[in-house]
Image 1 (cartoon, rainbow, N blue to C red):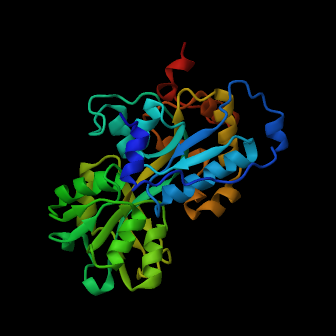
Image 2: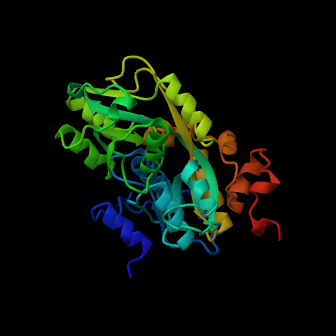
Length: 340
């Protein structure tokens, strides 16, 4: 029987590890001096489909860990946050990235992927960035609003990703009856340009590379929600908040784009050693310039945004890092292993 990881590789059309991100690099002095008792010999980090922000951000994060800690790190193409929660809980991945809506569903055992199973082997690390929901269509289609997607062929990204999970719900709430399809972000971008679909509705850190690639080659429309649509979504889904995509993010947008977003968090298996996770926290959060070179969305990867997580237990290594920064994690977010 294939593992969950093998299954999700197939859904990503056989894509294997995004890369062993960088070749072996000499250890930094701080890593050399570190007590490495129990450290893993290598790690696997779950991202999402190629062409999305998780894919780029995850490769950069894994690369920094390998460079600065000397632990080989590979990034795995997966179905996104839903898949990452399940894969980490099961032990097929060591680290991953999740959006808080799907993460909460997994936490309380309400994921279609693992119905009735509370995915409590996952631990929170650091806040990443907000994930705004947005749509791209070719300008020639004349599609400029969500309401106009009724009856249209709309790709929602990987079936188990945040976009597919929540766009389907949003369509139901807003009464939009689209002909939805699923697939990786890079594939959806190609399908859009080849007129195989009418729109690509996605959710990722901005700018979404697949959107930028499309508009660089052909005139496009990129849009979010109307005020009335946002009011309905905010009332129905507590995990989303208002968000403005700034003017200039996409060349196709005339002015800022109004939409809703969810927060993203980096997560890890509860079995990762405390000392290793602590060092991973330092690698990412103490090197903001390097992270922003990976992706502009990392400007929001800051320790002070820890409170974007209100339910996942933090990993003990993360708690140690936050305490050193003067941040006291609330009792309800401390893992059972710290309460013994």
